[in-house]
Structure formats: structure tokens, C-alpha cells
Length: 131
Image 1: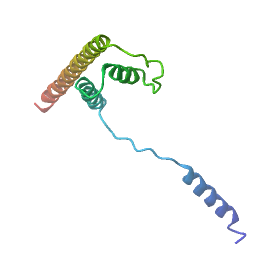
Image 2: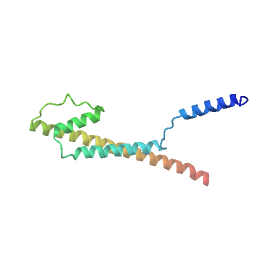
Image 3: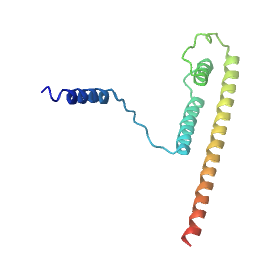
Image 4: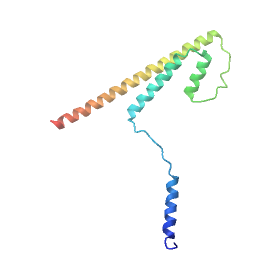
């Protein structure tokens, strides 16, 4: 077996390198479709936030700030709000959510229009070739 020592060592090194390989599964997705899917998910979250009836305005404000900043720390918003402040905060949050929904809808429609234009251009390029 001394004759095959170099080949055995090479095989073991190869096996060790192969064992170290980490793979990540990635979904092949059209960037436009991905953006549309993400915008729809964001719309669903915003609609859920808008229709949330279980919490008070202070909780909604904390949730909104955390989602906007991506932070988990809620230690600086522990003030007591009066009923009037809660109503004002609720209206402000609803306006922001509605504005975000409108912006997302506008972006989705422009993406769809851009996609439709590209499809029509591609079809127009194919027609002269077939003729």
C-alpha cells in the first residue's frame, strides 16, 4: 500500500475539501416578479396594520417605528398617551399607511406597464422575423 500513498492522500484531501463546501438554495425568480411579490407582501402587512383593532395607538406607533427602523428596542417610547394623543397618533399612522399603500400600488402598476411594454416590444421584434 506504500505505492498508493500519494494517491490516497490526494483523495482524502479532496474528500475533506468536498465536505467543507456549503450550498445555498436560491429560487430563480424574475427581478420584476420578485419586486411585485415583495410589494404585495408589504401591502398585506400595511393593510393588517391599518385594520388592527386589538391594540391602542401607542402600540401601533411602536410597531410602526420598529418596522420602519428594523429595530427591536422599544425602551424610548414608554410614555403614557392621553386619549386625544392616541386618536391623533392613530390618524397619523393611518395616513402614513395609506400613503405607503398608494405608493406601492403606483409602483406595481408602473412595473406592470413596463413589463407589458417590454413584452409588446419583444413580440414586435419577433413578427418581422417570422414574416
